[in-house]
Amino acid sequence: MAAYTLVHVVISLIAIGAGIVVLAGLLGRRRLDRVTALFLVTTAATSLTGFGFPFVQLLPSHILGAISLVVLAVSVLARYSYRLAHGWRATYVITAVMTLYLNVFVLIVQTFQKVPALAALAPTQSEPPFAITQLIVLVIFIALGFRAVVRFRETAWAPAQRFL
Image 1 (cartoon, rainbow, N blue to C red):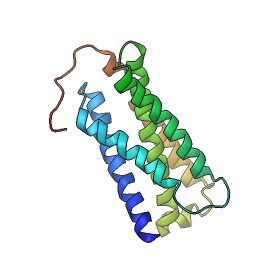
Image 2: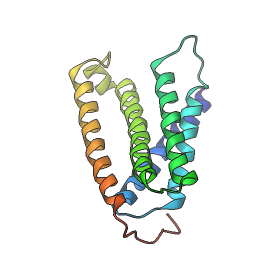
Image 3: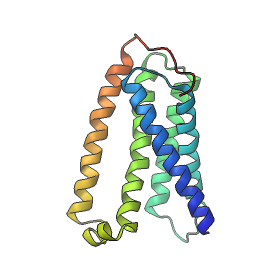
Image 4: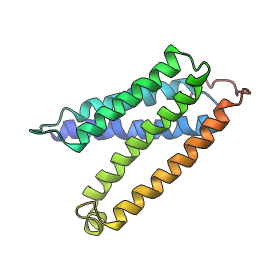
């Protein structure tokens, strides 16, 4: 199970890294097609592999994984099926940013569980340090998402980057 966990964590970190690059691209009005594909695929893999851990009851992580997959599906439809036409452009940005946020949300949860100093600050994750951290990250993502929607609506796109 340790190897499976390692693979899941590595995929998750790749998804977050690629998602940050995609968000930067959206803010800079660049499509970054290859990194976007990497982000979407690794995010799906992260959610799907999360269901591979043994469990006997439905957990919050399963609900979050299911929500992530639904949001991700809308993002993929907007990007590839509807080709960002009309309202699908904003839909894509919103769902891509939401998907990245959900990945980062889980990263914060895991960090507070696994890093001893943080676990001591918020052992049940209902303490103020955990809530404040999550609130700050949520506000940052809302602000970046709003800015990305505004920037993405502008029609002057930079050329797609071949290597990114």
